[in-house]
Image (cartoon, rainbow, N blue to C red; front, side, top):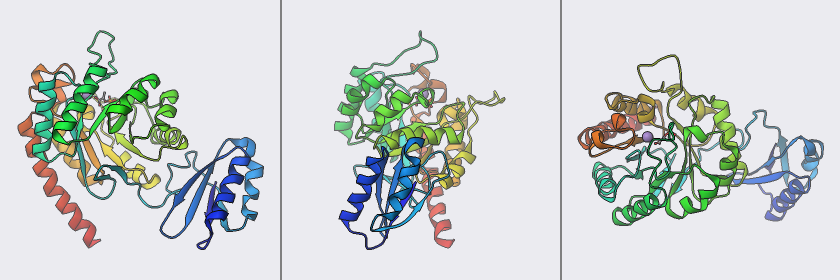
Length: 341
Ligand code: PEP
Ligand code: MN
């Protein structure tokens, strides 16, 4: 349910509506637009009848049901694009954000080198996993807190904000203390306990689509985070499982277009985990710019052949510099295209 307040509604009237929503067991989510204040009321079916009478309160212009199963993530709830702020960066503000770095944090030297390459290339955010959700229990599981400490050290030295994965609800406070963005990996896209926990965090969340997740399911997962009070969710298309085996996953670029229509949340693309091979990464990254994504997250490693995970799909620094130049050209073309339309 969306409650649209009248243009001249007072703060006291807004407060009264919020109180009413909460008194029938719903949660109120305020969205103050430039024109009007909109209040999203979400809850389960039990309060459905009572909530409708909120329309009689002073200051209310209209009460509109949201027909989609996801509410706060929908365009109906919020017409303007959400911009996720990370320091001076605005993810979803029309610029193209590049997150780059190794699959896993391995050593201080490796991470420092990656950060140096990322910065020199003009990337905005350093990626690197300290907790690695591996398919095999015998694969490297990450440096855990020691890896987070390295991320912090490198962030302090380079000024690059960091995105890193959290796999366990019990570790959210710990990861939040070190990271600028909390990553939820493809395998945890429907780990609802984890989603609720990061929904209570005060850092933005990068939510990756699972390899078997529909677009609607991804938006429902985003809803778990939003409904806990965290408005800063970045969606990520990283390839889905299909009959095709030539690539690790099949990059579903149409998901970017669909998500941007259905939702106000920023959408980025991970060409590395989609492709599975470095040879395919740059063309897919360029396609992400052209399809209108808000950015990419890409794996870069100074010595991919020595990487402890995902070396095969990691770009060498030289390839990454070239990609960043290409992205710059495409961004210019996109800007021109928007200006002409
Ligand atoms: C990763 O980003 O290194 C990762 C494990 O990605 P995904 O969860 O998309 O497989
Ligand atoms: Mn990886």
